[in-house]
Length: 114
Image (cartoon, rainbow, N blue to C red):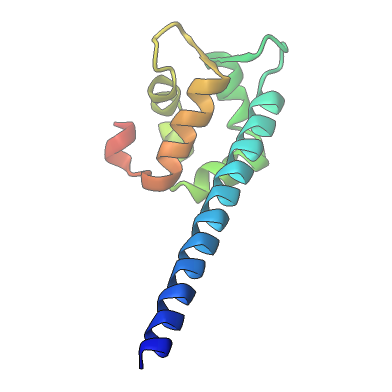
């Protein structure tokens, strides 16, 4: 019985390790996807997204699909920009974009954007 219990404990530890590795890989993949999205939205190439760039980008099908996956409507896009602009300077930089979208990806609700 002791051998069985030891084996089960060892399997449980390995399962947790694998689960943590998979979660970290998903986070990394999400961050890479968000970086690519930010680069395509940044039409002037300055490394930030203005409200105008953001509003133009949300008209694109790939951006709409991404927002739809977060259950965010196009009508909420302007509010979303202000949520992402954490320092209030009128632009969204890489860190604000990835942090904000990652947070919303996990818990996007209309109330968060409102």
